[in-house]
Amino acid sequence: FKLQLTITHKADHVGFGFIADVLNTFEHDEWGFGGHCNLWYSDRDFRGSNEFRENNRNRLTLQAGHVINVQVDGREGIGRVWLEGNEQNTCETVLPPRFAVAVSLGGRVGSAVALTNHQEPYP
Image 1 (cartoon, one colour):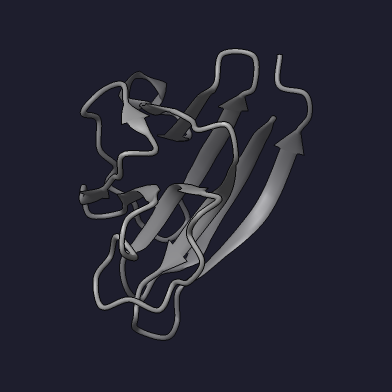
Image 2 (cartoon, rainbow, N blue to C red):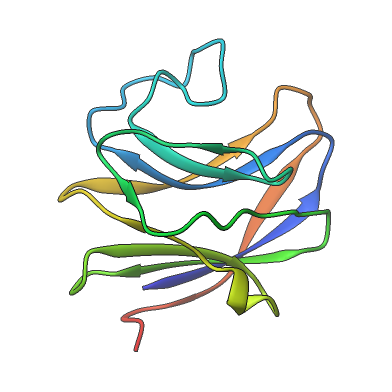
């Protein structure tokens, strides 16, 4: 499947990626939430964990109004995240057997992300 998300407001960093099924809380004092996730943040920051294997070192720089694509290739077990119009900078990771798509909004109130489109299954 493929999700298309739009950053409608950005007051702080925004992260996109995947969490493993063992993640049980977002109540942590750091951006990696204690591990168990792969998140690419809007300021080129990245948080990863052992449940995932990053396939490249690409990073994101995102602003309000940007459209982000999140694709899951279930046959290959690959997750991809990229800025619309910048496919050559796709962030890619190998996914664990059980996972969820994640969007992380920074600690400052005012950021918002909207689901604007989806395709299932992704060709």
